[in-house]
Image 1: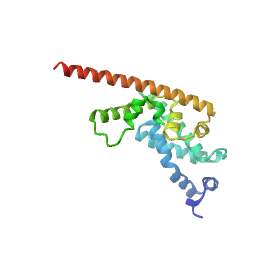
Image 2: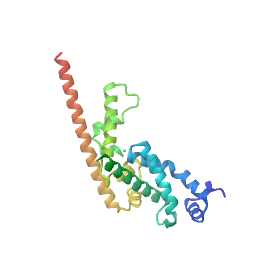
Image 3: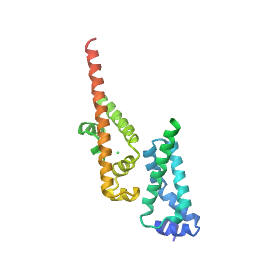
Image 4: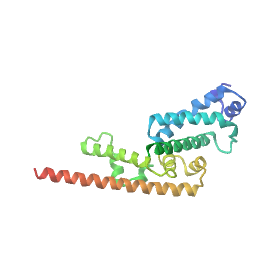
Length: 208
């Protein structure tokens, strides 16, 4: 049987015995998912690529400690999240998304409206809200950002997120709820600022 047709468990066992081809297949199988998660976490292509390298170096070095109590994908996600958090903390030191629940209905309707929308103002606002949301997610505390990304953006279940982050399901739900509240507050603030700026612009135009 070719390595492509083998299960993760079979590849891991062969890799533990020294099969480099099995390791390469695991990398091929999961590199895209790990990179996608990393890019959402660190929001920087160069950092995401470094995280991906770190992740698979960790896999290579620590696969012997993988006992199969959870799926390999869950273990890999956990390694990726930890590597991202380390990268983010280092970056801060050097400097000395089910999005439905994260934003008010009006903002959500603008973001998710018909793709053929031609109203310039609404298209502009939709882009600005999307950018504001990305920044808000990036500024979530380290304890909450991975939960929100895995649960509301990647669509994993609370149980799956709990296994990846080694949290209980109630803890996942609690952190997700708080993350959504934080994002909602930031987006409401953004929307109020947008409306205030628009009103001032209209008033100025009316005085011309």
